[in-house]
Length: 261
Image (cartoon, rainbow, N blue to C red; front, side):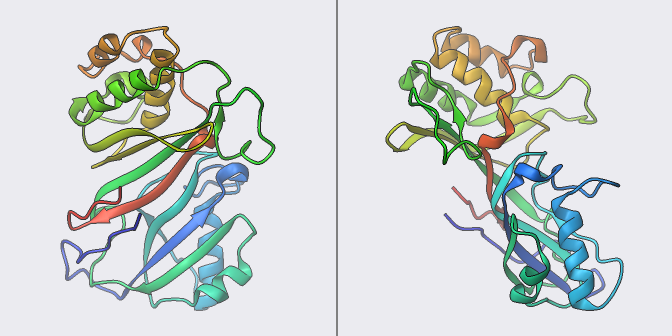
């Protein structure tokens, strides 16, 4: 899977722009966004950039703003300024975040505004015994699951829907419709399932609530048809639990219509 980068919309905004490709383990971060007194991915990266670029006030824009505990394999961010050497940045960054690339971007490139899609994977460990190695990377689900039912739910998720049921009631969102380009459940290995989803944008906790609700369907606690009704703008209380953050991984952003998954 790749992270597509196309020519930015709205070229002509002032300043040289650079684009970062980043991966991080979100376990010990309070999410992406800079917050006073908290350890965040944005805060660590901006601190390192200020040192390497010998300036103050570097401000990053990110393609997918992740919550506390959520990981990233191909996060995209941008800032106004010259590219910095990844090795120099990584020498200053903590062990759980790494810069994979830092290159000059087209004039006016903005990692958030110019992204035409975002893609995530949610990993579920389905064996009875817990894993010492997957404990920070996958949700442990030791109960029986109907894979066909999970796949039936995913097929319904694709397309344009009202996802009000899949985001907290207390929200700043004013638009609840999202276009899902692809959604599927896959089995990449023994005792491991992955829910893969790519959309134009996501609301807070949207994927984690989708997964939590689909696991209820897979466990026989609700039907595929009942799940489909939630995509019609039903209230949050009718959907299932919010799955834990550590199973969620941001895998990339698409630009210029290019897809990631």
